[in-house]
Image 1 (cartoon, rainbow, N blue to C red):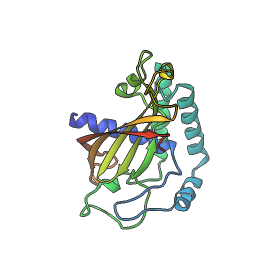
Image 2: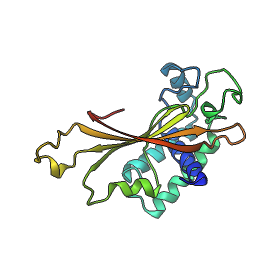
Image 3: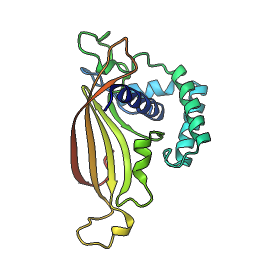
Image 4: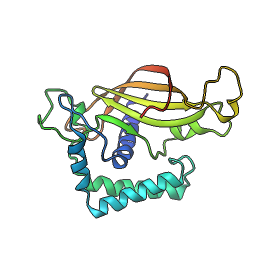
Amino acid sequence: MPREYSRILALSAVLLLLVASPCVSFQTSKLTTTRTTITKIAMTLSSEQQLLKDDLVALASSTSRGFSASRKDRDKAKRIINELSKLSPTEEPAAAYYSDAQATSDDVVPSLAGKWTLIYTDAPDITSLDAPLSIQKLGRIGQECDPPLIKNVIEWKRPDWASSLPFSGDEDSRILQRVLTEGASTPAENPTVDLKLVGLEISGTNGSVK
């Protein structure tokens, strides 16, 4: 994966996930915050931030996570995200991926670390996954950020047409595809995180993974 592409992809995905999930537990390399702390942070959202977030969530829902978005929809999403980024209260979202020597504080602060669910994307390598004639059914898409790792997670479900086939599992059966990368950033590069591909994991489960 080219360096510049990985930087852009990481930043785009992170922005979309951050604005979508204010109450997900965060963690730094040393400390884990409580849900109560993050809830208090979320409650400080201004009315302008909340309206923008509501607009983005509504757009994501009406376009099936961006998979059916028109050019007009994509332009609208970019405008919303740009406005939200200007209002972000998080000064160093990439801090969890600084080296220990670069860490600026031991205080618990919101960061990229945690589990995230994708609600909207315009990345062609993601929107192409849900092709009409696909032999599999796309489920949850997300990221598991546990410094220094960032795992891109794709959940595959049994397609409806395969329900009568033998050995096809049941409606709760899932195949989880995890693309493993190592993330690294510096205060100068914040909020960008550089990614290095390090592996691939495939596993099965009976039920959706949150």
